[in-house]
Image (tube, rainbow, N blue to C red; front, side):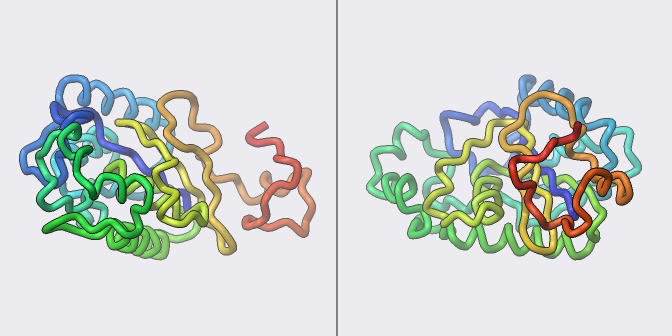
Length: 233
């Protein structure tokens, strides 16, 4: 059972009104730095076997805050980089909303190809491939964090839930939120989505012997708890 924590970067001066994309030099603002410190504090009790980041500054700065005080370096993986928005990069969202492509992005993102940029489907493919490779590299007992971008996280979650990419706009990913997925041999389990507060008890992998206490021996890590289960109780 490999546990993946997906962390969206903190706020920047462009977040929410301008499509930053791969614009260079977009750093966390003071709000974003505070968010990064807060989420780092929340995750401090959790062992992390790796910390991976998009190459963009706002993600690296967020990931570095999580890595502070840990003997775990931040590793860069370009496959977790932002969608290549091409000619849309750096433009106000209110302006982009008037473009014909906007409706495609909203209703049929699997068909969206940004002018001079990437197809949304290609973004999902590269990000999911990266997750699979990190899972394999780190092993079934690992807990690791990837700091990346909203659309990338939504695409990974859609894949984990078995959703068509056209449904990924139903998923919300706020700045500095944590989304957690546990990968088992049979299926992934979404543990948390868009989490901006609370404890981290259910993110700690269960101890092998304790995990079986009170459970049917026939159940394995890939089995879903019929009736909902008792959580971390």
